[in-house]
Image (tube, rainbow, N blue to C red; front, side):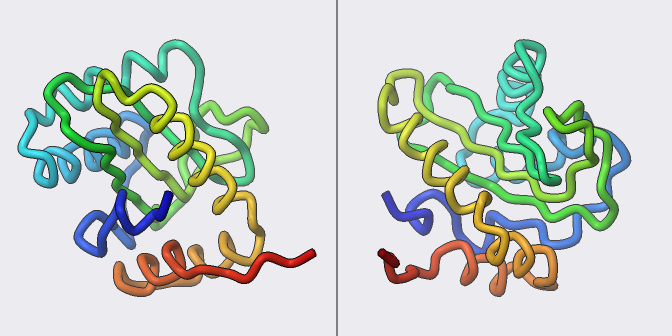
Length: 153
């Protein structure tokens, strides 16, 4: 699975100014609503429902909130790089500044898990994360996320 099929330059907020977890999720839900044509409230409610099960802050300043949405026809991603890190109830108790929101159709099954895995692998790469943190515009962030790296070993 190619991240370019999930996200585009128009799906990236490169300097998100939010002061809380809820505010970040609202901003990303708004962007996802514009991309999908689905109601922002429905997206936000589903993502917040998932957050109540346990934080999607995975550590190292990264969060991958996600949810399955009715009437969604394909996997959709949106990304925000926060201007200032915020508290996100992350596993390592560190503030979050990189947030990749993934939405999947109700019947996505394994595709949803494959996409989450792909996103997590990309965001575990310290070089990629450092470059994302240093990028200043959506096109650069998109390029970093979608470049293919040779497999070493």
